[in-house]
Image (cartoon, rainbow, N blue to C red; front, side, top):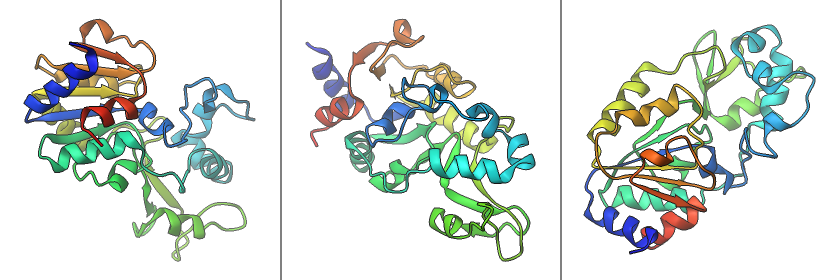
Length: 243
């Protein structure tokens, strides 16, 4: 039996699947991977990307932070791809119980997924740092002043609900992710190099015997997976669930 057929059989037999995904899920929607060959970490700026998207830089230089954030991290026209749609279908079928994602683009929800645990937050949620008023992505963008900094009517800065460098992950999201992964009878890991911690460490909580790794390149966990498929995650998942 080939890898694709085995994946399809395992999905058919499973009742509590959890998907853990990274940037490779979104690259098929034309959102660049930070660490890819053409990603942000391989481009030149006045400051390194890690510096610009840190909490201290956001506080000390909000104008430069938001210019970078708007130009390099927001893709409001991006649409869900085959991977997002396949996962949404699996949830609708009652098989997929949670999506645990490192991505911040909100495309899983746009595809129809309901139980999405966003480890690094979402560009779709924004709050005034003074009065805590909620703003959509579109409202945040339209609130940018001449200096490029989005401000609420109360004059407070509108901050994206994304986890910046120097900030901790949301403890509730972490605990729910751990619970979902530890209870799963099948874990599908896709589109991630598994090098970003603490997020990557969450798959260590899986106790089952059907961990599937779908990625275009090798990962540190390949030898621990029960099935490794090299290829496009959108193509692999869409064939597995017949969309």
